[in-house]
Length: 361
Ligand code: UD1
Image 1 (tube, rainbow, N blue to C red):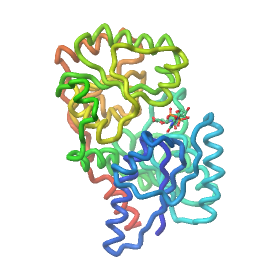
Image 2 (image 1 turned 135 degrees about the vertical axis):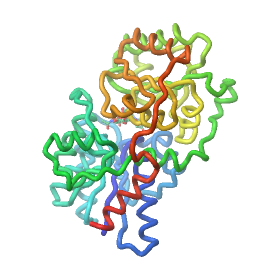
Image 3 (image 1 turned 45 degrees about the vertical axis):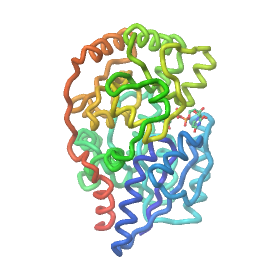
Image 4 (image 1 turned 180 degrees about the vertical axis):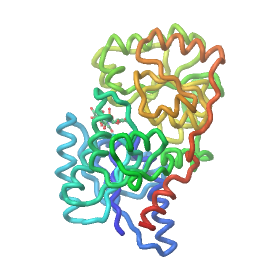
């Protein structure tokens, strides 16, 4: 059985690494299973892509479609054209897509039109916010998916509610967490740790890249102002996403109160998160990682497709108003944050369950 695995953007890489490891293990045990890895090139900087391949031991892709940049339509169309050629030249039994990025959408449509079955890892999650490009990507991908490998009972119920039958839903857990647990001993401090004199439990990590926070100058200024007001003596480390950096340069925003750095490697970033007092973010994946590491997380969004990080984990969804951020930061500083626990099956074995399903199917 040949599985073509698609990865395109930073949050995909930690999801595919354990799947490839599980395939290789199964292959070494004599099972008839193999893979082709296709990088769409959606993220192309070393800091957004190459360093993850190195650290997570992901083999070189069999092909790189080099489809980075452009508008959503341009990017999606370019990936579809290139991926169709790839599939015609290298037919496979299944295409595995992960997450909710444009590469996920483009490759699932392309595969399905060539009558190749589609497996969606992290299928079924919903923010119900149709202004988010990721939500459109999830809805379209899930409408043509043949098997869903899910991270939560909430996702299973979303799928059932939309008419998906139980035989197509395989609740496996979270491959992103497989990677986090597998590499706990590899996490290491970035050079800025010493340079800035950071101390365990006495700094905050912030990441922002969603259009709702970073495409509006006033909103972005408001966030930095809230940080400055609330965290006078507590350093804030801000690894800046390329999209956010472009906007900050365009708006002429240069926050003085944060330690600005480029995107960090996986090991460095998660070392910082693990030892932080708390995290401010608008990412989805980071809310899962903070939940597993038991680190307080403030999410600057109005909705989440990962409600278990709030109901079970350490995450609080506060909306996008800077005044709400100030309130939450005050709570964080006072040490009054909820204790979370770990969602079901987020135990480091999700990829193993996925490959077991393929071997037995
Ligand atoms: C994408 C995903 C988002 C994910 C995020 C994580 C979609 C719709 N969005 O958003 O779900 O949370 O990745 O990072 O797929 N750029 C670079 N270098 C790179 C990559 C991007 O300079 O290596 C630039 C691009 O040229 C573009 C901007 O950053 O101008 C945004 O990149 P894009 O891939 O379109 O979307 P993200 O905002 O990264």
